[in-house]
Image 1 (cartoon, rainbow, N blue to C red):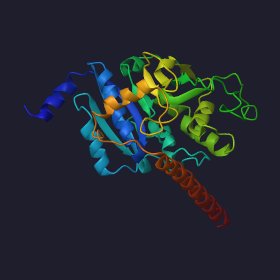
Image 2: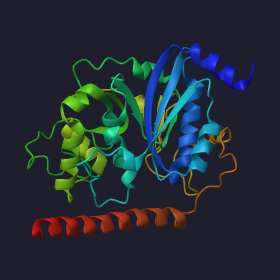
Image 3: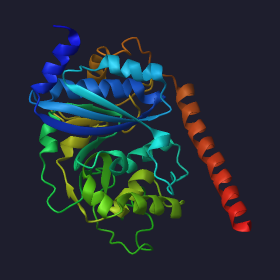
Image 4: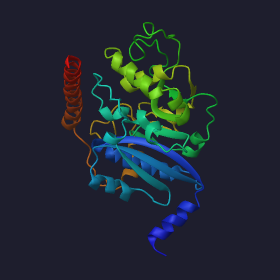
Length: 318
């Protein structure tokens, strides 16, 4: 029996398919590979990881490195290129942050995921998994569209530094809870029916100066009072310490940087899984390269914003 046949038998024994979506550019591939290994290590023996990767300009060579890093008895990978998933008539919002444009790509999950898949788990790429995702998958959303964790730094719309700064102007209640979008359980059918993607894009684009964490800003407004609160351990920040988190979210310095300064235990565990991937020889990234990445993100958005404005004016003049 060859390795391919063995892999297929392994998949057949895993009767429950857990659909997970992540998005990444080339910069974060070591984290993506590590996240996948941690999920595989903790997934129930009866579950199959149905993983959809939205790739932002990822080379064929690096896609193969990810493929080489996974256990194909546990995981089935599907690649979606960023430039092919954005529906006609929609555009990525060009916010003023230094975050990459890839932070918005998962907004379009319901547009490319097969219609027979009614539910997905979305995970930010800068995470490490510690608990069987089958438990999260089995969470009942009731009549709500999504499930998420309240952001411990912000908590409500009226937080004066990172919440919805203009919530009153937009007609929202300041006491509405504010979630961190790093982990979300999504009913894709209800998401589509309620036009969540379209609403979130408009909120970000139309409120340029108020969108602090822009992709979260748009989603918190679009999903206001229409999501359930998940156990906070599903999105536990690496800036603090817990003996048994479900997912650790590296919200500040990432473990791929020399200047990582959060909980050292989480760094050791990240490195443990990293060594099991095709990036086993990865060297931490210095501050200069980190800053250059951020500067390039800002420049890219400014160029696109200028180009978009020029194109709009040109169309209006015709």
